[in-house]
Amino acid sequence: MSSYRILFLGDVVGRPGRAAIQNDLPKLADKYRPLFTIINGENAAGGVGITPDIADEFLDAGADAITLGNHAFNKREIVDYLQTQRPIVRPSNMPKGVPGTGLKTITKDGVRLAIMNLCGRVYMEGYGDPFAEIDRLFEGIETPHRFVDFHGEATSEKIAMGWHCNGRATAVVGTHTHVQTADEVVLPGGTAYITDVGMCGPVRSILGMDREIILKKFRTTLPQRFEVANEPGVICGVVISVERETGRATGIERIRFGEAA
Image (tube, rainbow, N blue to C red; front, side, top):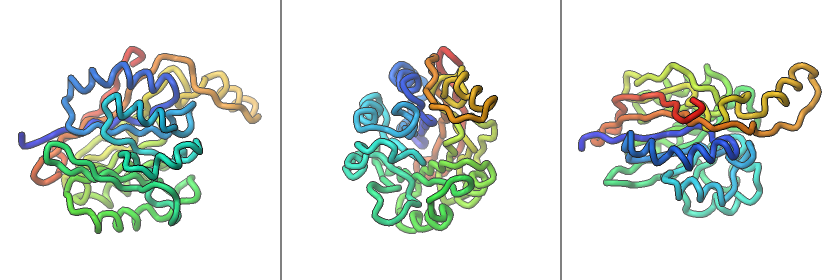
């Protein structure tokens, strides 16, 4: 075949998100036949962080790789796991010496896909310049098949990253805000882009969290302990079509799948 597909699923939130992955990922795989399946798992453990068991659960369910974000290290037990050869990446623009890596390359059916993870800096502290960091990563990558998960708060920063990588990345997909945006596009240089792919989690919630808890916080301004909503999960993500020879994207499709959708 002259092309292949990448299935990317947005931030998995807690048990409802994990259940949706377990129940519906096989159906999505049958429908779209992706060569690569990538999952952002940074909210998978109780809404913040990921554990080795959950990461293995995703890989066993059919994921080829896992990306993270600003909650990458919320569960201490993930530290050693990030230093293994497992296909999991944390934000690359973190201080030198932080466990893990922001770039891993996986190969399937003759295609070498470089998978990168970065965090934005607008409204998010502690991260280096993501634009300089992605330039540094690109310099060391020989394959034209390059997938970037840009985990950021500000839409402007994400859009800027898409254009910064235009023609140099197969895809730049935004994560973190848990709300799927309707701006999916293939940029002129062959880079698939979307500002946010949305979440895999309880749809009748507020960004995956219990509605009443969040409403109480807004109404009273008092601190609250956030809890993942006990509601059915929905899957949000994108399917990207890619030319095998060039690594250029030819299409990007938003997906929203599951009972709660």
